[in-house]
Length: 149
Length: 149
DNA sequence: GACAAAATATTGAATTTTCAACTTTTCACA
DNA sequence: TGTGAAAAGTTGAAAATTCAATATTTTGTC
Image (cartoon, rainbow over all chains, first blue to last red; front, side, top):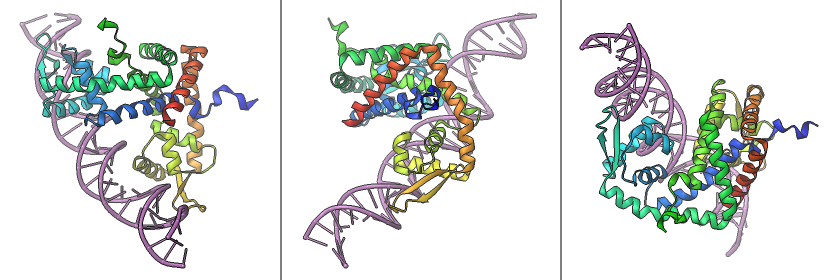
């Protein structure tokens, strides 16, 4: 029967939509917390990635924080204005620009850390450890498959 | 040991990040297909939701297509210019604006349908029916939990 | 070693999104 | 029934993002 044609899925039951929706809810919650400190999610991601002290190039960073190059350039411009990060040329390859956290950036990153941690903890608490782990596992392998093709 | 402190998760292993990343990959793939017809994902969602013929209010639509009101207003403005949709006042509540697909909009929606269907089909094929179903189930209940709190 | 092609990042214009303020209509209730 | 509060959309200015073009450095190859 036509009714159960699996390719006739209403949009709200399609994977792309469920992902968009789940992502919106979860990142809205995270955003709410970060707003208390006036930090947009993108900047929080950047601060966190740079926290380990190693410099990252614009390209690497754009890839991991899910932004395209011009957008990242402009966000970094703002963060440099706020003295959170600074740029330096990569001595190995002078086309590249490496990014580092300033002292102020490090301090902010430390202050933000518990916010994000408790966000994750709260999800696990409400959603269950097992479901959360399983969901993460499935998302991880979906990402792997999707990015390799 | 500090190393296995579960609250010290690297950002790339946090649920919020995995969702953002999976969402980006999958919607980029969908976008690629829709770009062949020059239709942005948001407009495709709107066309699809309106396809069942029932009029939707701006508010309902904004909620389901994950856009805030002013953004939706402006997207609808563009779609009205392209003669894809039209507005009408809700006779029951004249504050509301109901949206309907024009003939042109219906035709476009029909042409787009197989694109999205084959996108979903391709994911299922590559990722496996079982994993996909399980992922959808978990996302569904995460959304339910997240939106109810 | 020179020169074309590729890789990396930035810039400026154009588009899109967001925020705050506003209009119109409905609701609640005194 | 009248009046203030709430709900639904829209608007215009400001901010952010994107696209196309550009500058600089490196790589590959003859």
